[in-house]
Length: 144
Image (cartoon, rainbow, N blue to C red; front, side, top):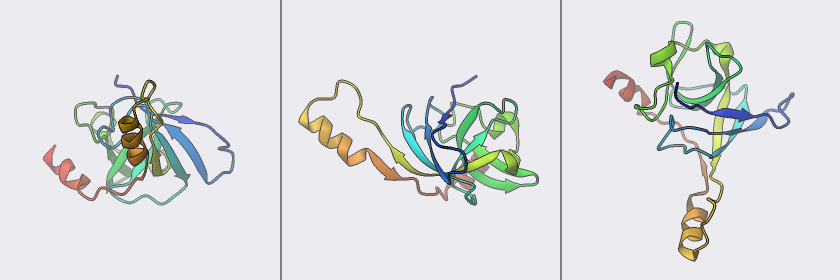
C-alpha cells in the first residue's frame, strides 16, 4: 500500500482550521513529503480542490488527495502522482461524510543540512504557497 498523508491533530476540537502533514509521494509535484498544510474543516469542496479525507476502508487513516469530479454518492479523488496509487481508482467514490476539509495553504519546512545562501533563498521563495484548485484535474481523469 502506498504511503499516504496523515493529519496532525492540533486543536481540532471545534476549530475551523487545522494542520496536516504530508507523508508519501501521492501528491507530487504539488505536495512533497514533509509539507505542512493549513486545512479548513467543513469547507465546501469544488472540483480541483486539494482535500483531506478519511480513507474509505481504514477510517483512522487520513489522506490528502485532489477532488476531481462529483459523482453519485460523493467525490472521485485522485493523487497528482498517477504512479503512486491509493486513490479512487483503488477504492471508488468517497462519500461526502469522509471529506473533512479543503487544504488552503502549503508550508514547506527548511530541509536539514541546507546552509548555503543560495539554498536558503530558494527555500524562502518556495516555502509558503496557497493551494489553488487545479481545473485540469477532470482532463486527467478522462485520460485514465
